Image 1: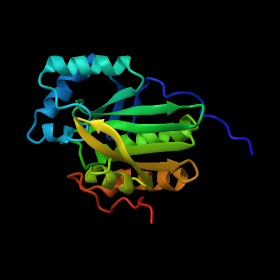
Image 2 (image 1 turned 120 degrees about the horizontal axis):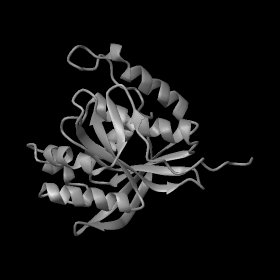
Image 3 (image 1 turned 90 degrees about the vertical axis):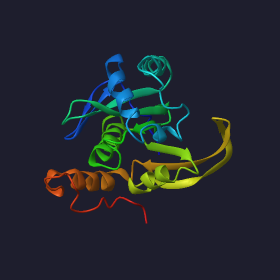
Length: 218
C-alpha cells in the first residue's frame, strides 16, 4: 500500500474557532503574553518549559523574535471574547515527508488553562494537521514528571507510546520524556467528540461544561 506524505509544513495562517483564534507569533503579542505570565501563578506554569518566565516585556519580545527565527512554528492563542493573547503553542518536529508533526511549546496561561479555550486551541491544531494538511501522526511529548501534561494528553485522546529515559537535560535536570500520539485513523471519532463538546449548547451561561469530553483512550 502506497503511503502519501503530508501536503506541506503548517503555513503561518490564522486558525479560527468559536472561542479562540490562533495567530502566527508576532511582536504585537508580547505585551499580552508578558502580562499573563505575571499574573499570580503565571510564572509557575513555566516549570516544565525550557525557559523561565520572562523577566521583562523586552525579554518576551526577544523570545518571540527568537521563536520566529527558529525551526518551530509558534502561534499565539487569542481569546475571542477579550481579543487578548492568553497563551502560545507550536508546531514542532515538522516532518511532512513522513506525515508527522508535534504540538509542543505549550504555555496556556491561567485565563485559558483547563477551559474550553485550551481544548479548542488543541482541536484547531489537530483538525488543521489531519483534515487540511493530511498528516498521519500528531505527537505530544512531555517530561514524565509533568503530571498535568500527561493528563491533558490522555484527555485529548492521545495514546501513550512509551518513555525515552534520560532523553534530555533541561534547566540542569535530567528529563525522561513520555511520548504520545494520535493517528489519522483515530481522528474522525475524536473530531466528532471534540465538536460535540465544544458546541455552545454544552456550556451554561458561565461557560461551565454540561458534559465532559469523552476522548480519553480506554
